[in-house]
Structure formats: C-alpha cells, structure tokens
Image (tube, rainbow, N blue to C red):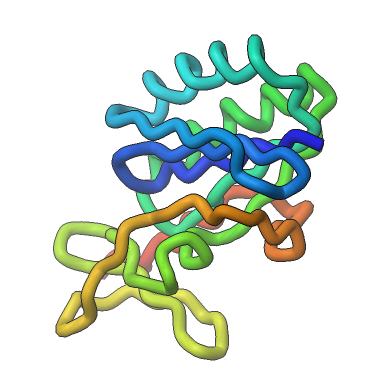
Length: 151
C-alpha cells in the first residue's frame, strides 16, 4: 500500500511517500503550494500507484490549506484515491504554528487550538515521520482554518 503525506502549511513543502507505512521517499520543495504541488504530483503519479493521500488540513496559512485541499481532493476524486487529514501539530512536536502577523497557533493539552503571541516557546520544524500512524488521520478532510475573530 502506497500512502502520500503532504505538509503544505510551511516552507518548504514536504511530501512523504510511504510503502506499508514506512517512509521510502522524501520530497522537499520551496515555493507556493499552487506552484509546487502540481510539479511534485506530476512526478509522484508517474512513479507510484497511490492508494491513499494524507494531508495536513491546518492550522496555518489559509491560502496554502485551501489550495492543497482543492488540488488533493480533486486528485483523489479523479483517481479514486482515499483522502484523509489531520492537524499539523503531529508533525512539529506540538510546536506553535505561524498564524497572522506576530501571532501563532497553539494546541492546548485538551486539544483546543488557540491563537496568541509567541513568548518563550521554541519553534520546531515540520518533519515527516519514519513510520506513519494511520490512526491519527480522519475521513473528515475539510480544511481546518482556525480563523480568529476580527477585532
């Protein structure tokens, strides 16, 4: 079984190819999601028979999430590929994720996502896991924008 995991909420965009839940290829590319994803998937679709597409549906860049969702959802429908999502905190050791201006998304111990200023917490880069835990992904693949109320 071939799974493709896409983390597009930060730069570089990370794509991991997994065979039987083990990472076999890593693709890392700088750029806009709208430019990078089609180039990556042009290559991936020629090399692999994908069984499942997994992606980070938030929080993070509103535009990156929207573009990734539309592109990957369309790809999954056209090619009859399973499509699932989870939040980005699984891939950066629960580190804050850039939100707006000087604010960041934080995930509390009870699972709520909040927006606040970054104080003394160190940011960690996103990383593709060596072994994929499929249980963290949900069939609910809709974007999770976590947009703050406008003040």
